[in-house]
Amino acid sequence: MRTRAKICGITRLEDALAAVEYGADAIGLVFYKPSPRYVSIEQAATISAGLPPFVSVVALFVDPTQAEVNAVLSRVRIDVLQFHGEESEVACAQYSLPYLKVIRVKTDTNLIQYAQAYGTAKALLLDTYSEHAVGGTGQVFDWSLIPNNLSVPIILAGGLTPENVNEAVKQVKPYAVDVSGGVETSKGIKNSVKIAAFMAAIH
Image (tube, rainbow, N blue to C red; front, side):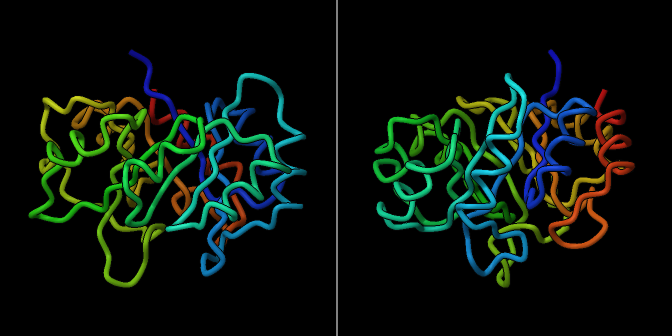
């Protein structure tokens, strides 16, 4: 099966279009103000409206209020929600949109339990645990911590780069991979050469 790819932390339309040109299936927009890759609703609307068909737009939130999510959904075309915080399954599922639940993996993380707890999620997105950040750490976690028998698809994130993504795909066999910092010139500014290399390495 083809491994799909999401380029996350997009802040400019030209970066989104470069991601699509090189074969990305989805782009991620960050609606979390402390993030260096945060986009305003206006920026997000411009990026989303400029995309061609058959590209999914994923909106990333961290413990948002219902009003914050609805404000985005009222102005921006969003296909999938991504929740990075401590949101419950009920909180994630209340918007009548497919959602991804992010799990920040450390040695004692019980992924089978999380898969059961978020049974309505379209996938679990596995990222690297950090005390200092909710994502975008640029750090790889131990892929051997992922069980083979999870009941939901896996999207692999955390420190992926053009240099290591091929090995990640071979070892984990995820439904999709998710990259942000690994294809950037600086935080929030993507590098089309790195995107091209990343996409080529997946396949």
